[in-house]
Image (cartoon, rainbow, N blue to C red; front, side, top):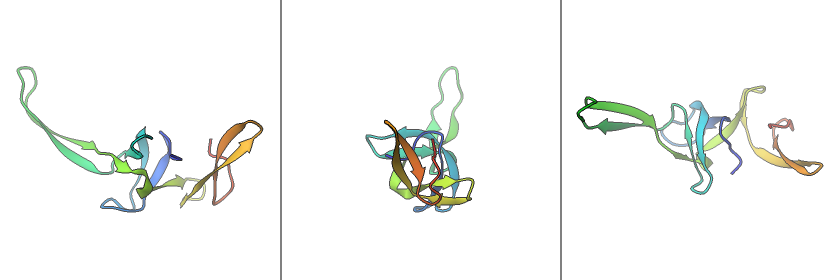
Length: 101
C-alpha cells in the first residue's frame, strides 16, 4: 500500500468524491484507510449510569483504491512510485519526480 498515515489524499470515487483530507489510520492488510472528514458515519451510543445517550459522528474506512495522494506543491493529485537511494527505498511522485518521504 503506497498511502501512509499523515498523507494528504484526494477522494476520486464514491459519495465523497472531490474531498481532501489527512489519513488518520491505515489498515494495510485490509487495504483500507480512514480519512479525516470522509465517509462520516452516525453512531448511536446508549445511555449508561455515567453518560447520557448521544449521537456520534465518526469517519469510517474507505478502500485505498478510491483515493490518490495529493501533492500540495503542485496542488494536484499524483500517483506514487518507488526509487532506491543507495540501500533505502523512497516514495516518489510520478507527476514531479520529487521524493515524498
